[in-house]
Image (tube, rainbow, N blue to C red; front, side):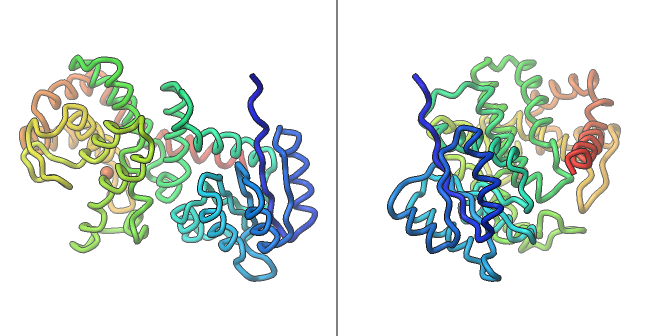
Length: 344
Ligand SMILES: [Fe+2]
């Protein structure tokens, strides 16, 4: 059976942009409708549904693209919305994503990139209804994290992917079955996704320590992440583990202040691994730690932060892989920089 042709509404006051993007999207299998103003776009949205809506933000100086986004969320809540602008500010991109846009692209937009992104976004939108395999779920969640939280704080680039790989090895070592390990990997990728929904994202890249009030705000992210991912029925347990990733063995964590085995075993695995990779990573407020410093810290946290059995299994893994894993965040960041410079 052939897949239905996907429909896209392109909105821009520049005819040349509309025609160029429209022609490429048509060649990539989309059925494209064009609108030269936000008013035209909204009229079209009132008459028919689109799989995706791609809109410029500024129309002769007015931010009408946000009006298109608002109307799209109201009239067509399942459509994918991508905004384009010649003057991207990070705050604008984040605000758009929080208001329901899938992404925010800088003009001139590469039509091939846009076509690929729309195909992926439309597939993500339908993931709840389709029988997606594990690899596809990994790809979708990785894309969500890379497009949001890792873009805001480049220091965290690759953190989700590394946490996923190490969690899988640790879980395998302590005898967790394959099915649970797969779901744990999804939780590992997305564990910090809720940060994108914090009210003030400047905390995430703040130099120096957070104030007590800021720290309280940041502590909302495990539950925010679980709530936002929770729209997908296949991720129920994944959401539970995301919510638990800052719980601590001695009951001093958050948000539930669970202790010991009240915290799920996958949650305890995620906790140890996530702390390791965070310590190994340079952040805006601290340098990367060396391996010995991490090992010393882990010893002080036995039975405080961490389940001692899970910690022991992880220390065995570090004995084998520690030198490489401690250097991996820096290597990933340099690799990311190289890839970005090639793309530019
Ligand atoms: Fe976190």
